[in-house]
Amino acid sequence: MKVADRERREELKEVRKKKKRKVCAFCVEHSPGPDWKDVARLRKFISDRAKILPRRVTGNCALHQRRVARAIKRARIMALLPFVSE
Image (cartoon, rainbow, N blue to C red; front, side, top):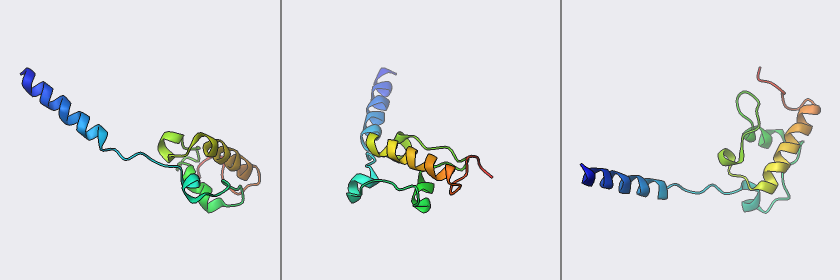
């Protein structure tokens, strides 16, 4: 019984190690960051309920995640993005 448990734990460790780490899309492209007028790009960072997706989902770095959130909020105020889902 204990041997099976140990084998199962080792398999789970291997599965966890194989996950690919997400990288920030803005850092990879060497772009200055998100712009509130680029609605098509900002839509990638909001859910179907129009909520801002967290870093762990999008893979953004902390700096660009803050800038994405600020750009989404500005686009909402300018009525380019919805505050709530339709």
